[in-house]
Image (cartoon, rainbow, N blue to C red; front, side, top):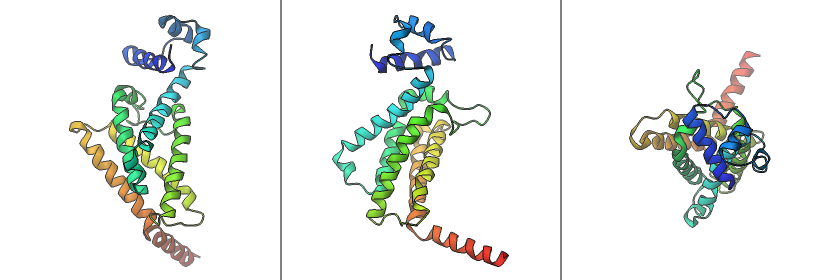
Length: 210
């Protein structure tokens, strides 16, 4: 049995039953495999969830990097292309993605365990995007600040995800618009003098206060 098959069957179970399987034993039995064989693929159900998010990211990036057109994009255009394709791939499993939503806050929390591997991979990707942007003068290098941009992009990723989860527009057209506006704004903030002006103003206010 393929790892992807186990992941698919797990997702189907969660969606059909509205909950996780009672145990690895019962789930493995449903798949007609021994529990010990299951552990040869995944150590737990949480590991399947991590693999879901991580695999979607990996598939998205591999497809982009195989595209010669993508290779010629600017840093901003690359991030835009990533979000568009990432959301497109998530659509195949929209019901499962929505199941991660916390009903109390009506959104998917940033700290769910399933994001661990995905988050690390995305931060590495964002780091490369930023480095490329700095080299090409798309992004202004700011000592002590530039290396924090990756975390800003992660927050942006969660915004995109949750906007899409709540989007009821036809063919999720509003999500496409939100992606474009969010990426354009983030690159404006880190390429122009906006941040520098904010920092200077903050310093001025601080100096006045003391």
